[in-house]
Length: 374
Image 1 (cartoon, rainbow, N blue to C red):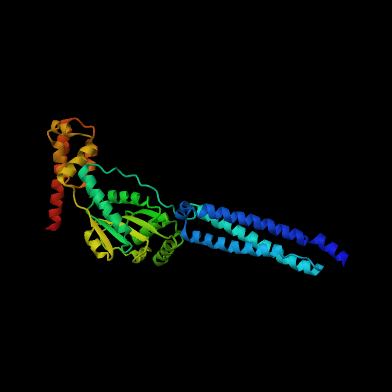
Image 2 (cartoon, one colour; image 1 turned 45 degrees about the vertical axis):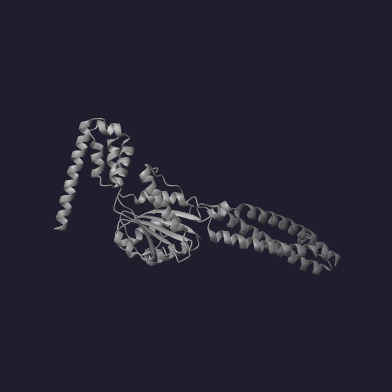
């Protein structure tokens, strides 16, 4: 029997050695759990990772704590009797040590996924946008901003449509909203910005949305399959705001794209811009904000700001800047475009030419519209 024990000790580690290994693995796993709780459960990481992975880490910690209790109990009760009894106990200890090693590896993988930008979408980045300027314009845009942000905070409203004609400032306003919402770390896990493709189609929009939420649609051509994959991706993201800029005229079927309409009380929000006020009314459940043209005073303030001129310069230029601003009819994009082109121009003849050319374009546009309506 002694010979058998000696041979067994050579071929297999002793029960004491196995228990020592178990204790070492338990100590390491306990320290790893403490590290994960301290690092990945911080608010910054919680808000920067996928909610599902965070939940999986919570489960991993709980299971790890249970394994450590079992390991402590087993380590305290290892009394060796016969060789066969020792071999049986050693088998239990070795199996538990293996379970601790497997659990440790699983935690490392989950933790790596939680911190990896490549495995999940970014929370969102600030968008470059011109500052709000001019007291009247500033007040108008801030009021609209507060209105839309108030809607975002309302749990009963999940979708917002910002409406208005081309060039009225929808994208400008929504970029400011996007940047404001990014600051609400305690409210939303993710803030996404998607610009509608020029060739608007369900497939193209799906591709654009998939790119920002990091959903792989490359191998699928079936629109329904693609929509389901996008919907499943959104389902595990927790709370988010999706900004969709430039939806063309006509109704938009969110389900066909894969953007499931947020349920009442949901922390998932959708904000879109569209040039079709009729299309906005067709979107049931949307809170709508319709942007209007700038007043003459606001238009002139914007023109002078973009052209880098003051009232003294306006008078020296025979008030032509005021006439140009009026011909833009309160459309901010048009005002910015013309004023930017005239920035730094001091020659009165060039300003007169600009006024003449704008008047010519205005006549052509009027003639074209009258021809279409006849």
